[in-house]
Structure formats: C-alpha cells, structure tokens
Length: 152
Image 1: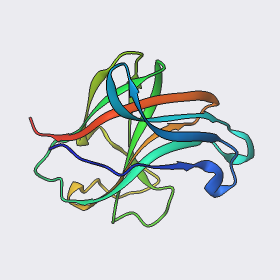
Image 2: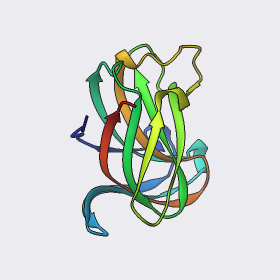
Image 3: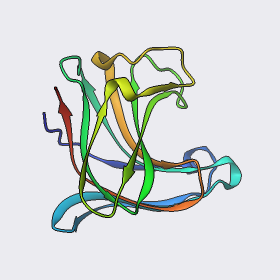
C-alpha cells in the first residue's frame, strides 16, 4: 500500500542541540523525492536531523515498510512511534544503508527494536514515521522517493 506522507523537518534544536538541515522536494537521478540534508552535530547533547510524518494507521495486515532511498553511502534509521509511547525519546528503530543509487529497502516490523520502552511494537497503533540521521557527527544526505507498506 503506497503512502502519501506530508513530510516535516525536525532537528535536535527542539531539545537544545545545534544540528542544522533542510527538507526539500527535488528530482534526484530521475525520481521525485523528499530530500533530507544536514549537518548532524553532537554538541550541546544533540545529534539528529529528521524527516517525519504523522499517520493514524492499523498496519496489522502488513509485514513492514518498504522505502525507495538514495543517499550518500551512510547508515540512517527509520523510527516508528505508536500511541502506546508516552515520552518523546521512546521509539521503535531499524537501521538501513542509503547508497548512491536508488535502492528499495524492506524493513519488516520484526526488525524494529524498542528504544527506552518495555512496550512491544503494536503496529495496529502506528502514529508517526521518521527517517533520521543520528548519533554521530556527519553530513546527512538521504532522499526518499516512496514509502509503502508491504505484505509477503
């Protein structure tokens, strides 16, 4: 199932960090995409830039997310939030590599690890999806052309 997200940019500045970035719509290597670029800084307890969108979705009929990505040969994260999480630092996380050519990445729900929560991922309660450059100082550059739910 193809999603049509309304992406928004978020950075660690919401909590005092100093990372900077942009979110734009561009044509990259022949494909329309949303592009997250920025400089991730660990200064001032920071460390991320993010493209995210809200949704209210019961994804229990699906096995995971499939994304078409293009990047700068770096590792990024997809994070999921559900309405069962009450703190902003809680999430479910999976890593992926964004190579310098368009690639389809499958992220099964079973690959998402809980972060700072004891809750199990309940995909019937999805509320937010994010793609993050996080955890190390580097120049982020990742583009997403499509986000889909997949079933085997």
